[in-house]
Structure formats: C-alpha cells, structure tokens
Image (cartoon, rainbow, N blue to C red; front, side):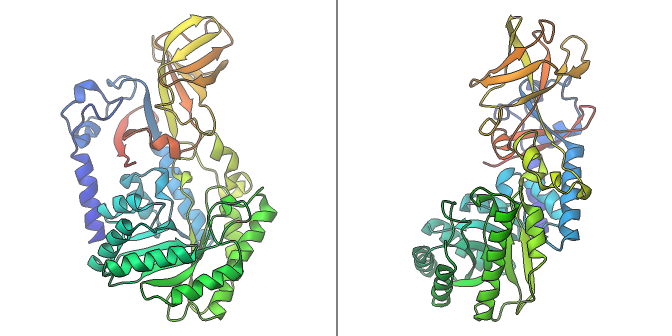
Length: 429
C-alpha cells in the first residue's frame, strides 16, 4: 500500500501543470505537465530556461545516494536521512530505493508531507507538544497499523502535554518515543543529565499513550565539537541505552532504537555505535544525515567526515546556480541576476565556478571572479580583469548549505552533464 501511495503521489507531481509558480522554467512550456516538459529533454542553456536557474546534477545525486547506502551497510547502520534538507518526495523515493529505513522529520508539517506520499517510517527528531499535531498523529497511527513513528521527549511537561492531547484525541496506539540526551551545557534541546533521563523514563512508564523505545540525540550540537568531545558524548548516549535496558525500561520491545548522526560526524557515530553491547532486544542503530544527497561547495564540503576517511569515498556537490551578467559598470565590477531570493547565503556566499559565454556557449573556469555580496536579486562580483565577463555571460555558482538552497526553489531541473534536463524535483517547504 505504501509503495502504491508513493508511486501515485510521484505520478501526480508529474501531472502538475507548468506555470508562473515555478521560476526559471521556459515560458513557452506554460500549460505542459511537468512530466511532458521532462520528456522533451530540453537543454538547460538553450531550451528556453530563464535565469537565474538552479540545477541539480543527476550523476552527483546518484553517486551520493549510492555512497551513503554503501557506507551505512558497511558499518551496520540503519539510515533515516533527514528529509528537511530537501523536502522532495522524489528524492525520498530514491533514498528508500537505496536502502533507507525511513525518513527523518523535524516538525509535524514535514511528517504530513511524508505521509501524503506514503512514507511508512518517520523519525521526528524533535518533541511534538501541540494538540493539533498530536491529533493528526493519533489518526494516522489508528488508520494504518503498519505506520511506524518515533519522536523525541526531553521534559516532564512535554510528556504531560503529549499524554493529555493523545488521550483527548482517543489515541488507540501509543506513540513511540526516545529520550533525547542533550549534547552538553549550552547546547540546543535535550535532557542535560542521566538522572533526568531516568526520571523521564519513569514518567513515560506511567502513561499508556507513550512507549519508550530508545534514546537519541544530535552530536552536531556538542559545544566546541571535536572528535574527542563528540566521542565522549556518544559514549554517554550508548551508556544511557545500556542503563535504561538494565532497568527494564525496554521490556517487551522487539527492537531498541539508538539514534544520532548529522552530516558532520557520522564516522564517529559509526565507530561508537559499533561498540554497543548486546541488549535485551536487537538495536536499531539509526543514522540521520540529510545534507549528503546534494552535498555542497562550502559548509559540508569542509565538514564531511569523508575528509577524514577518504578511503570510504567522497561526496560530490550536486547544486549549481546559473545566473547571467546583467550589468558591467566598471572594469572591476559586474552584477549577476541572482541574489538572496535564489541562493543560499546563511553560511557562506556563493562561489563563482564557471563562466559560459553568452556569445558561443563555450565554458571556462571563473578565474578572477569573486562574489562579495548579495542583494535581494543581484550578486555583486569583483573581477580581476576587464575581459573576465561581459553582459550576457552565464556564471555557474557553487552554493553552501543544502537546506537553504532547496527551500528557495519549488521545481528544480535535474540535469545531465551535457545540460540535458531529464526531470524536475518538486519541493514542499
């Protein structure tokens, strides 16, 4: 049933009409369905697309999907990639095809998108305390006995709010929860001490609307993170699972969940999780990295664990934002028609990578070009030589931070190396 829902949902995406809602698509494609436009296999540069246009490299996406599948399998990890990175059901389907256990969410809205497309396993890496979201969740669990949902708890008040809302909703199945261990003083969410974790376990045992199934957290929030500090926190997480198991808190489970793993320290997660002792039930060692699917040319290029373990492979940046030179007011300055509305800029500015001639389509490295600032609709370029670019040239920009790249575009061309557009990735932010 879930597979049918996902297939049906993807088909409905392909049947959506191309119109003014989707920026950069060819104006002459108005009225075609997305599937019909994809079938035309237009060229990104000569097929009528307007600039700026964000492109996703098909071969890099496939490479990254396969690499993380291989890595997870090799290290005995289940994988629930964080879907908030892309919010793209087509990519969720690809991740599931590449062995993902399920998809991670951060808020109920994201989980609603997932369920619309038939995602059967959702790990929500946050506490859910609003009654409306919990009513919806209770209904989903009641309607589908095969639906698996897990979320965080990190406070007695949160447990109380969840219990009240679920009882008022007439929940017929308990919500599976994991206790979130905070990453340290000054970190983000999560319980700060093991003693508090045990207190929460007692409280969960006292209600019938929740079921404790494990422990989790996010090592990316460890203050002043380095390998030693992250390892120490992960060992605390593992020890907490062992202590709760010895206390009988996981009795009658067929599987205990131990989860961590963003996109910066999954190698350390794999190493520490490998040392997990045998517990009273099999352990689902759940990794949640999400940025890998597109990777990037900035933040995650610098942070990826594959820099430390090159023998395991390397991710490939898949995004490139193409913009045109629309003004060349001085020999040292040029302006592109892409700005904050189009490019991720919360962590690093875009990087000029390649110039495509507006005269003959030839490409050359963007040597001497530097993005120094973004306005709403312009990128400020400094140029070393007056002949570096001219009005009409296309400039390909590498981006930093996938999460704030995907969320600016509702329909993203999936492009082969020669510029052929083979599909369009729909996002839901």
